[in-house]
Image (cartoon, rainbow, N blue to C red; front, side, top):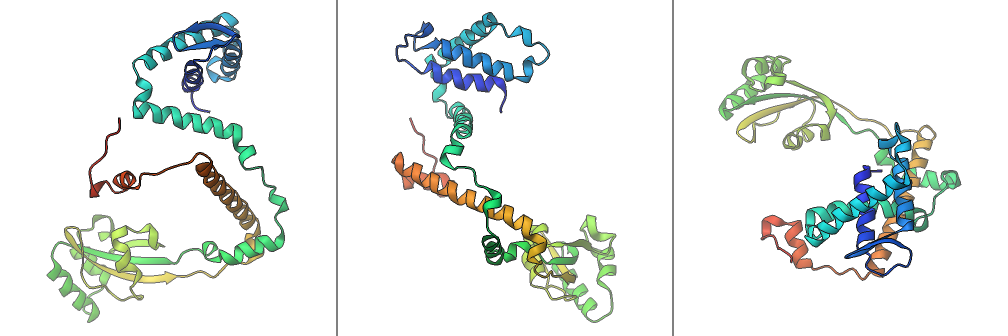
Length: 292
């Protein structure tokens, strides 16, 4: 649950936006009312708040009433000044409202799934269909030499390939890559996705102990050497079965929620202005649109 102030703000925002006459109203004001049920709900929220853990006796009916009315007055003032139309404020309010409503409706929208109801056959089929995700990625051991001069790297590459110098020695003497230079250019051993994005293409296609041509990356040039690769076999199903069962359960929840959102978009007649959407998705291709 987010902080109490935001909880109260959103609940009272909804109450303050209710302009329908209510015979159970304790107070009325321009633009809304505060009912007995509102006060009871407000009191229940305050009792759950850690803010009052050390002083629960403070939450008297009088205190709840004063606090609720004061909040309503702040909201009434903000609505009058149209702060609720500010996109930044609307985003904050709507984010909380969607989280709150989701907690209330989620079991109705997507009923709880029983993990133990998944059959052995279903779990095994999911494992077979997604086996690549259970195999650890190949680990690459990499050495690197960085230098601003391409010709220096071309020369040192030729010397290394001719056996006149080792990659490690060349890195210690010539590399400007400070974090690896003293270790002979050794950058570690890890999955390709753990290396810098602009290194990956040069590393991934190298054979073990081969040396790349000088590669231009930003303002410098690089030589790469893959010292070793470790690949992994597919794990045994029995070893991973508990994890696979959880993954299958989450997959079923994802599918169920995708269906719910598709249904809600249809139910509420969602329409998209593709032209304006593209301006948001690809702002570099056009100008932002301002909406009234």
